[in-house]
Image (cartoon, rainbow, N blue to C red; front, side, top):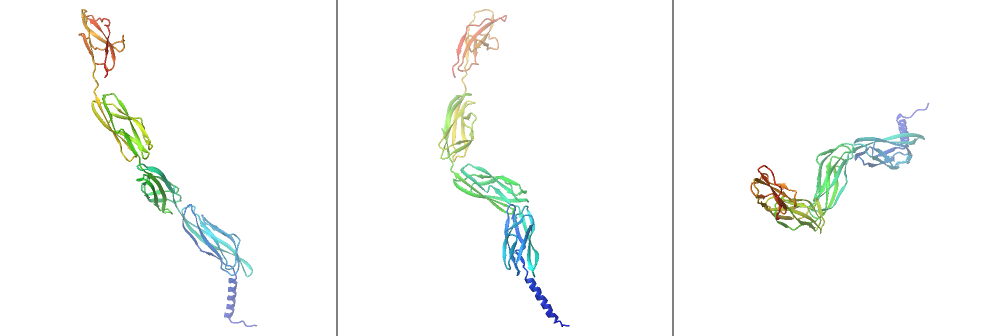
Length: 421
């Protein structure tokens, strides 16, 4: 029998054969592994590049690629794909979260290689991870107020929406830019998933010229600082004029009225008048309605009326609320005069006997009809009518009544013309 050599030599030979066989196989490597996407806002996606390389000494062929986990996908890899020893290719993995919170998945690559002439199949797996984050969005992302007159204001609306799957807390909102402000947004404010809040943005320019600004919103969303741009233009205020600046109605009998015309005019720029105020109720304004916009270079007439309620001098002031740069007023005055008291004195003669009294009748048309104006028999042959009105004409007749209560026919008619006033 042949003698076997030293054991150590045989072990060395076996080890060398093993190394040779292992080195001959193809080996697939993925870098980086694992693939970590971090925080990705909902509604967006993030892509990362991965390198696939053959680190073995023989060719390999990637025969299958699968990916698991909600929101994960890959691209840029054409299957089957052969890689020579030392060859590398790139592929892209993408994370597009469908809901807020942590997400995980795997990328599995199955490849084949030959070992000692025999085909061997292997699978390499790379873990994937990412977090879906709620995002705050602004609609619109910019507001333009165009042209607004100094002293006036314009309002537009801005909406903030939680586009994620979890609640967002808005802690702060600030505005920059002269004349810009916001109302209707009470902070801190929590928005549920999919919810929105709408608030007002106001532009009230302090000077003429272009103005720009910005709304900045701070929250715990994946985009913690959200901005919306603001722009607008302020224009110079117009001038408002009252014609005349003083109006005297003269003397007027109490209870009667007199109307006069005044006008409002604008210069430099249009003026919007929102209301009018009179300091004395004996003066009234008609002929215009508010709000009223007066174009530059034009005027609008209106009527002022004086109706004195008591005797004596009455004064007042007419003023307007408007966006003009000046505050014009019109002074008003008039004198109330007590009405003249008129009366008609009547007298007659009667030679009849047994007469105990007389009745007096009055009409407004010659020949009647007449109405009795004395409340009781008048025992004299005179009567004063104090219930007459200025400017009217009256017709009078009398009758006599004897002791038996019998009344005579009408006397002849007397006419009285009351002067005016």
